[in-house]
Image (cartoon, rainbow, N blue to C red):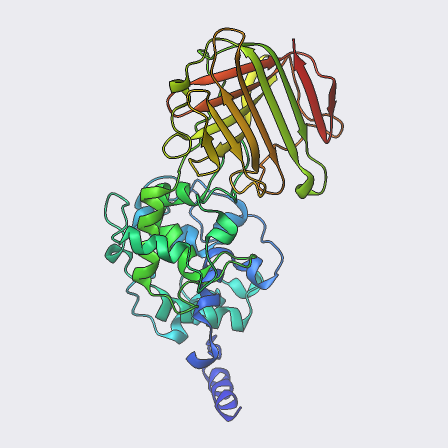
Length: 423
């Protein structure tokens, strides 16, 4: 308290805008790393509106995105000298890595507008505690990401150790929330999925930051906060890049060269309770299919069920349900494959059947349920799909094999349910 009063009197005497900075022991670098990501989610402040005054007019972002520390200074903390030196996030603004500013100078820069390039975040909802945590993060949590990620976006790491870290039983395992393949949580929307693997391929610096500090507004733990090392985080990054899927097999519009069937049905239920979500697709009496066409979904062959809705005859991808190779697939060679998983660990898939046969004898079914099932948002208050004029469902695999059905009419097309059959 005496130190505070002395500092306050000095401020008054010098007419300075310098503010009190809590001691490093009182600041939290882990929380600072979360604030760096999206501070209003962390501290509960109102979401900022408009563009931040310091955001360059030529920048491509707008709104609250321009208030995120990472947006100008980068996930690699190097700003214009790093990964954000070009592309849609380019601002020309310097990073914080290697800064020579003192804690007091950083505090002023973040808090007020009375210093050169002052950010004025005290006016938008950042408290003194928030700013102290951010400063602590910049001083002690910022690392040189070049030691962990090379120029081609590849992690320097031991993928085998990364797999151990990813599925560790002695710490909160990543698999508990993200699943074994990193697809249990979709960070975007069903039609444009983003998973752990997507992030690893496209923005490894963001992945490294989130592994180290966690995700704002969620229960995701901080790897380094739980005692993990930065190299251990990079090892996880290497495992993600080398083993987890980055992209869906579903294309933006339906594939043209797909096997047709004489009969098909689809049922989609999306009630308020996500645990009761359901999708059931049956493709029967189809064109000739060979057993080899199915590949080996138990070990090497990825599958996706793609839902397409049309609007004024323009098809667009409404949802992609992606299933990685896993032991729930059981070979019935030469009679195809069966899938059974009561927990629906992979995209909610519970049961599936892939049956080869001559024309009129082949069959495919796909049944998924529960919270891991990523279904699209209804197009209207009382309509699930636009169906103008139809809805297309395609089951595809990475061997470019495809089984399709088009539904021009529906038995039910309501806010929480879509049910149709062909013919």
